[in-house]
Structures are given as C-alpha cells and as structure tokens.
Image (cartoon, rainbow, N blue to C red; front, side, top):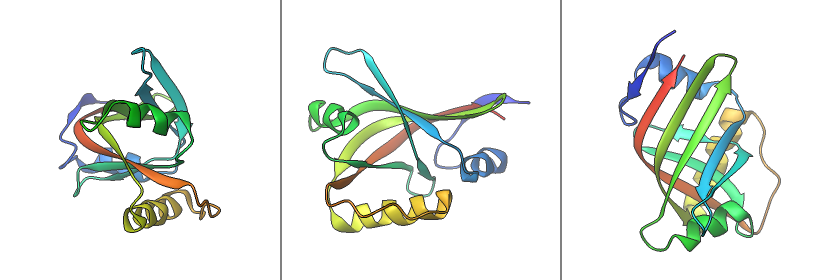
Length: 137
C-alpha cells in the first residue's frame, strides 16, 4: 500500500479508481465555535472540475456551517475508508441552490451510488473547490 499526496485535479489512476467505488464517506465542517462537525455523506469527485459534491437539505447542520463561514466559504474535508484503504479530499465549500448545479450533483450521486435520491424541494449542493488530496490505497 502506498500513502501519498495527490493533485486533486490530476490524480493517479488508483486514487481515482478508489473514488469511483461505492463507499460511504464523511464530511467535516467547522462549527461557528471552530470545533469539527463530522457526518456521514455520499460524495462525488470530479477531478476535471476540481470539485467534490455533497447533496444535502438546506436545513442540515452541514449546510448551515458552510453558510455561516460567509462568502469566502468554509474549509472542509471529505474522506472515505475501506479497511486499510482511505482517501481524503480537502478544499473550500460553498452552497449552491442553482437548479442546474443541484441536478448535476444528483446525477453524479445516482451514478456513483447506483440509486436516485428521493425528490427533496429543500435540496442544495455543497460544492468543494479542491485544494488538496491524499490517501493510502
């Protein structure tokens, strides 16, 4: 097994392959007091756009935390683990309510997780502009 940093916009094939496998992930966002809030989520990774996406309800704590960070966004991380293998993507998160962006996030989620999420009129997408990546796989 190898452990090393990756370019999130140009990952090596084994890193990208691991992110295409169906795994539950975690998202860590900062609470207003600075403490970490960690929750299970589904994540999709788009290296060409240097984005990770998480669909969520606009009333969720994770969305509130990202919005509370202001226009500059929130520093966050998403991680997935499978036995001894793991991979983390880091970046700056913003929340989008734009229908096209939400639809693209839902499409990618359905493709990775092999199920279309139920309709949710409060759905938004947390888009993470990636600044770093690392893993052991």
